[in-house]
Amino acid sequence: MTFTAMVAQPPPVPDDPGGRGEDFGKSSPVGLLVLLVFLVAVVFLARSMTKHLKRVPASFDPPAGKHEAAEEATEHREEKNGASS
Image (cartoon, rainbow, N blue to C red; front, side):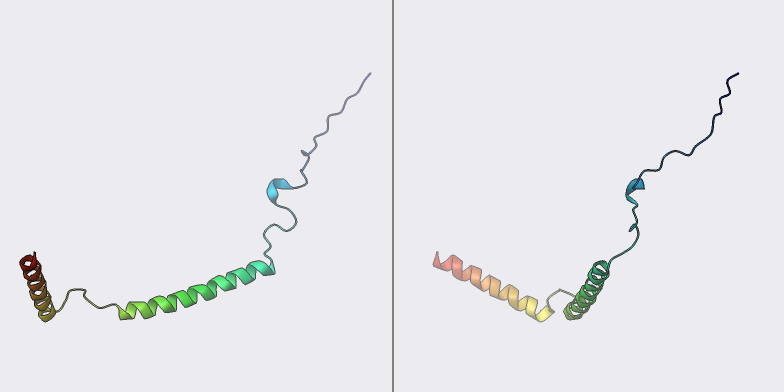
């Protein structure tokens, strides 16, 4: 009489399951340094942007007096160019 036994075994596990080695999820000191440099850069950029935005006028429309003077100067130049041609 022959007796055969079947035993269940777990599948073999690869050495590096999906790129998750021993150091998976750990950051290095270089990564921390890069993150800090980015944070400092963002702070300086925000300060610079705030300074520039404070200088922006509320409206880009020319004042009424200057607009009329600019129109007169344009008309005067057109008349001068037309007369000299």
